[in-house]
Length: 395
Image 1 (cartoon, helix red, strand yellow):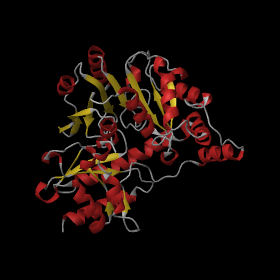
Image 2 (cartoon, rainbow, N blue to C red):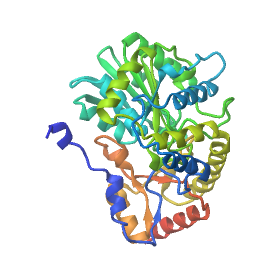
Image 3 (cartoon, rainbow, N blue to C red):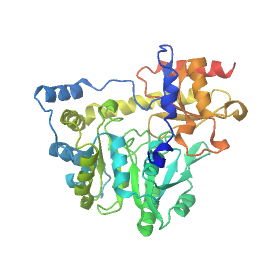
Image 4 (tube, helix red, strand yellow):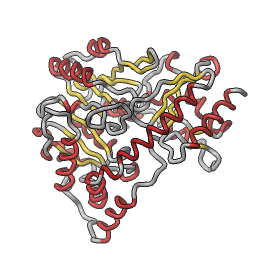
């Protein structure tokens, strides 16, 4: 096998979850998904499609009606003055993971330089590494109780040699979110260097700050259609459809036909019945997403104060997403996040994701971090989890 594949790290999150297999007493907050089932009307649309015999291939780029619906949806979320997004810029993919991998395959050659803002969901550093790229990281910093990006450090890292800049906002795991002003600085700099931007905006709607359009700032608010920008999205988070594996890309119109060829050689197409479910979900987004966001805000506002009250815990409120990223400050005792997460499963019945899963070659100062997915239907489970954490820390 290629050395780049052999060098891949196994998912630390999966390994921690494996430690809890068969244990019904474990409170599971390790995966990035809600524990709420997909709404019935979305499931019914998929069932109806199957009953009608829609079991054949679709167009590589997706059903025309779904691409049209995505284009209208994406345009409706844009701020005043933003470019209209047409269906000719949209490709339907088999999940957000697939969307991101397709974008990286389309842009990155072996030896190319890719800059990634971290900590971040591990796929975003692994995908360019799979393609043989040289991955360089610019790290967020926790300062004044908020996650922040040193923009000067980022601009110094992105040079004419940089093929691609990958940024995830709202961010998994920290909840950090770019401001529109920061996006404008990034985009202007990448225009000067000729660098592509891959924006993972799957948490765009899961945003807890006041905004005119009810979502986080997007590069699509400020970009021209022909900018070197690809934006990845997913039905997973905002529509409670993680297991359906359905996503999309927005890209320059000159790129879309070629992306269709790449989809052909990856998956051929997303399943038709899944696309029918996606079409119903996006056409009735107001029946799902606002309720999901309101509930997640309640979950965040429940969990964060409880964690902040635990001695030895450092945590900043998430501006978006569905995670609390916190540190156990006793480095001598909790230095290795992976080992700590495994111990929490076995000794406390608490399932969290290890923080070093989201970092590349983490320095000692970056250790001790854990990610807690707070997307729980039963908010009381969050309080119970904090009680288990606090009792374990006191041992």
